[in-house]
Image (cartoon, rainbow, N blue to C red):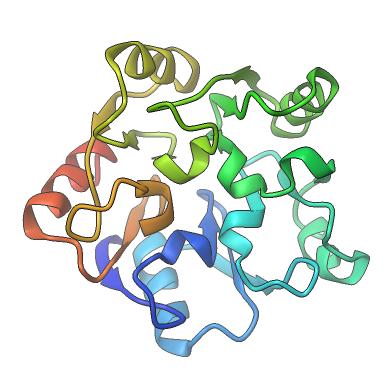
Length: 220
């Protein structure tokens, strides 16, 4: 548990290939053993490896909290089966297929891309058991790529406005901190996999960024 630097698929964008809650991590099938070990040790959770519609970018295609999982509707029944053994699963409609990019969720609330239909937002709220609010963050509709949240804290792009921060705090019920990751990258959701117990961070993240991430996710 705590914070650890890692790399997978030859990139520091770990959040593209994995996603986690306090009870479960979901990673790409065929992930390197070193990355899976880092995930397990940093986040202290069981990891399930899947593809979604054959794609390995499961961090972009999956969102989850302690109550449920939302996944791209490209995912086949056999790909979803191991997830359904643990939590209810919602297949998302086409307009917001990339669940990990389009939904930011913890056990207190969810921010959903404005591109989603109202009926989809209702389903997202139901699967996660939380209020779901539609918004952009830092002018970006892919809220899950520019932010990452746990049940203890939230990190967002340094371009997020004060109003964005206030909304995140109101919906997710945690403190929010602006930061970059991987030596200046604004897509903090793409560069980090985290839960309340720890964080796995891209290996080009600077010590100053690591300090902000530790503070923002309350990893002490």
